[in-house]
Length: 219
Image (cartoon, rainbow, N blue to C red; front, side, top):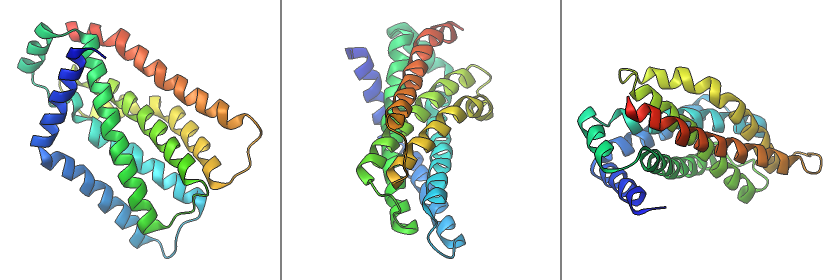
């Protein structure tokens, strides 16, 4: 990681710290959504429902958290970044920042889920690792979608339109992989295969971002 990537990453973190209302707004969204689910259920959900609800909420949390990644950058600011850094440095810094933000949001969601909806997870350490891997993949996809949407008249709705078809296969993989933390029986090697596929898809999104973003950057 070079100095320009670190400087851009530091810039995003400082902006987030100064605009605390955005961060707190996402936290409120997470807490309110989980609390509404808690009120609507007469009893704690079983493991399968708990797992499904968790990942669906992570999907929408990521859309809210990552959507502003490029949309908050004005044309003048983007022109300034164009003159001082490469497009690869810029997209990598955005991906790293959004991965860090999504990891934090995912862990907060996991804590709130455990508090309000119980904890049917058999292996919490394994599930936490899967949450980190899954949250990373979701944030990478929507970072790339945010970059594309930013070039399409700043249309935030385009992020969801482009992102959901792309994220569904990865989300299904993560949900299936997370079932191993609920003491479900899988054949030998299945967990490693699912983990490998998920990591490979994450790597593919990073490669696509590095290859495609310079063309968007020149537009």
